[in-house]
Image 1 (spheres, rainbow, N blue to C red):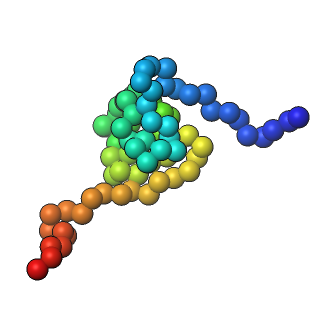
Image 2 (image 1 turned 180 degrees about the horizontal axis):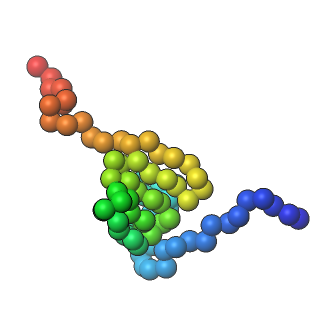
Length: 78
């Protein structure tokens, strides 16, 4: 049987393991490479995390930037 999809081996070899790339807390994985001069970091789970809070997952999916609201944009209840 031939497949066109390639299996992505897990990068995380330590214990406890980092959250997988599909997890909601994927950004808490350990840093593998950090390049602030280029605006990105590689996390242990294979996620490329960009300084604008965007992400590129190992399977090619893109997560749009998701910055929290700034102090001037926060609404409070009266």
